Length: 184
View 1 (spheres, rainbow, N blue to C red):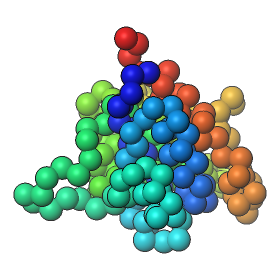
View 2 (view 1 turned 30 degrees about the vertical axis):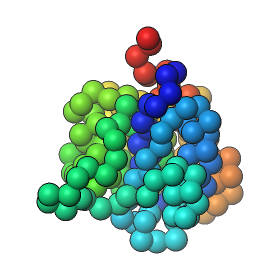
View 3 (view 1 turned 120 degrees about the vertical axis):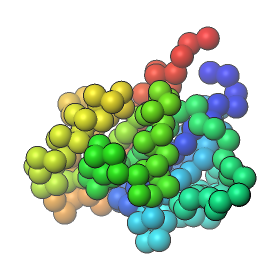
View 4 (view 1 turned 60 degrees about the vertical axis):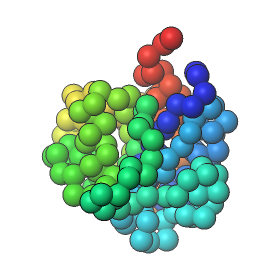
């Protein structure tokens, strides 16, 4: 991979978000310039370690739209990883709702034909809702590589999310996005 490729890491409000610095460091080690964008819930809650993410990426964590007339704050993305993707984000994204900066970016990335990978994190109780499965299929139909199911990520039992946090497979998402990149 050529140096200087830009990866947008969209971080949602789920347990593994507290370890997102692992993904940033791993991506930087692979030659990516990483821009972290947090959903409002992830940014406003205690889900992310903003100082650690900013130190690791060398860039501010963004979570809000830029103001009219304000210059673009991040370079254009070459690829996008959405992780940990919550059920809420999956359902809103699949429905075309772009009411946050993070959702606007992922909706646009699909429209631009960028390589986009989503790595979920939700319980079997949330997974059993019919909208969740429809959202995964809709996103896949739009060209998003959703790492969900056997051989990828599988939902956890309710109440066990914290136990699964440490084993969240950030590298799986990075491997998948790199496989989607054009060769050359």
